[in-house]
Image 1 (tube, rainbow, N blue to C red):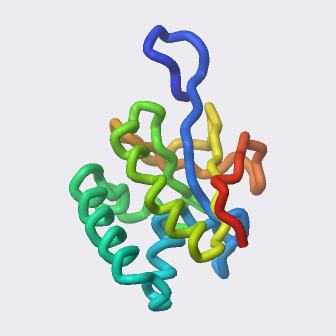
Image 2 (image 1 turned 90 degrees about the vertical axis):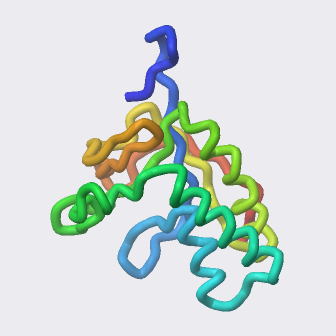
Length: 149
């Protein structure tokens, strides 16, 4: 569970994701949603430039959990596993609004979820956790990011 620096109150982890399940029954995260738009050829040149530049930055800035544990996202082992930012990942969170702007421009809804305990941790590093939700549709605080369908 996330804690503030004083060891006091729980500080929520955050995840940005679609409010709708994909064909595999998962909620696609913000980066996957933008990457899907790119695969469909729907991004403008400026949006594609932003996506490529920032995806490279994120790849360099933090570890892809599947490079440490190739089974972390295996549905048979960790059903519904999803990555959440730690509260301390402010430098990573600072670039998310650009992705949200792209989604909004294309009418793709994205929710910001916050939870002090989003699930059973199957991977953790200094900026993120990958968790298996305790139960499908577990209750977490969420808010719209302003994007819409």
